Image (cartoon, rainbow, N blue to C red):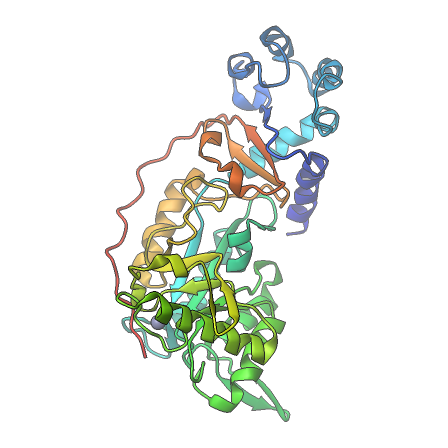
Length: 408
Ligand SMILES: [Zn+2]
């Protein structure tokens, strides 16, 4: 991770100066990396200059390239351009090594209970530990769901963000044990397993989102506040699963607002935290969806940046035109579903979100920029680059069938 960190900074450094929203900068891998003179053919008037200049650049060393590029810098509006030209050889190396793709898909994994034995809707402790090991080895880094919803994705270059969610606030997710007179997470509950893994692999992170419902999230009424505070103080977060774990399919708008507002108020009163995401109980989508994103209940305002479904495929990048905040898919945390989608990403690495290491830029593969949603970018800069490998993907597996999640 040390070398990754250094390289991450180098990639981040080149782009940090480019702050103009939606400026599109085309970058190209060196002809030596491409294995042929494709530089000229990939250039157009939107890029570094006229086509003839691009042909002149092909085949030069990086020093020559820098000399050739410099005069064009003055004519471009983007203040980051000069920096890019100066550091181009480094840019190419980082792009080749990390192949960032910030319009790729992100897995939001949905767990329910964690217990000793594997069952339907229950992941065994051993298998949950194995899942974490597998995610870590395959280059994933945990982020909060709220970070994804806000497009604030800050993971090292080359890494893929991953979101863990837990529905129903069961005791198997979070149980306290007493140690030296203090309450600590049981090492056999989801929070304990996650924090133990994080201690061994701090670069993996320990972000997770717990979709809770009342009257007693995690089962022990007098420990509710302590547990919610513990989660928030340890890099995890709380989401809305309705106050009564209600099936909202046929609920009138007032009842939906009450279920969402009452939970928002309870969490806020307990620990001053505002929930900003909703997982629908039983995966039941209401007919009245207008009150899902925001509303008021007894003077309490609530706002959900995202509404999560129960199934059934990886979620779009938050910068993608395909991102729908009111219908965000998740993958079930079961052997079959995880193997299916992890296998797909192994066979199709260009299908997944790969970070460029800089939260202020959105780096995408040439040809894919049409899928970026300008309204989702905030003040971030869109960067586009060509690749030697192109952008071939096999078709994704069929989405999993609609699921009905259990309740309590
Ligand atoms: Zn539920």
